[in-house]
Length: 293
Image (cartoon, rainbow, N blue to C red; front, side):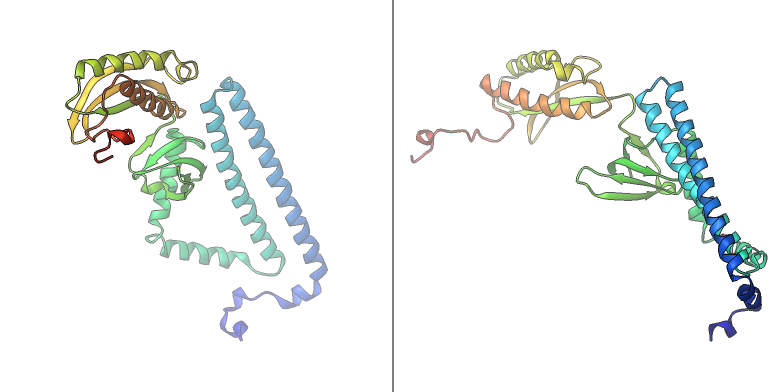
């Protein structure tokens, strides 16, 4: 029934298909084999180029990430082009006249051009991401308020994995402001609030000694570009008077590690000095100190 609905140029030449079925099967097999060979050769060239880029940059981490990103996109592109060419050749072998099909596809593409403007925008944005080296696979970026690690990058979209393990698919054209947390340095900020009725001078002295202690810690020092410094009293709010330590850390997550360890150690040192943190009452009471005990 479908054969009577389709136009003649979409129908295969059945006589040719019947008479040359064996020849068509061999041709298709050779086409598939040739496409596979071309893809393998292309992948080999990409792999060699990737290694050359890494050697030329003396094996820096950023160069490795960038070369892997370009290699991944190149593999996708080669696979798409080779598969499309092999499909058109197979249709021609089976008796379809692909010229009207290509003309029809071009007309359909022009008709859908307005609807495909977002796709074109995504592809152009993806090309500029690669050209300007905004981020690569493995970078930790923030896009539209979402923070995640780049797992895959194509000309159309970027795939992220956030801290909780969720996978995020972001069209490249939707990225207005991109924050890359994996380039250069990040500022490690250690904020700890103390109760407003505590001795501020004593708290600042404890914070300064804690900053020196943290900067002298071996594995933390390796994460820092410069020692932690006491900034002072940052602000006063409902949580209390906030003391701040800050210093430049490596962008490979060093700032988060330093801030996490710094908060824990500073709170411990303040408690040891008898300085209450935060505006909440001290809940670490002995049973005999509890009213009514």
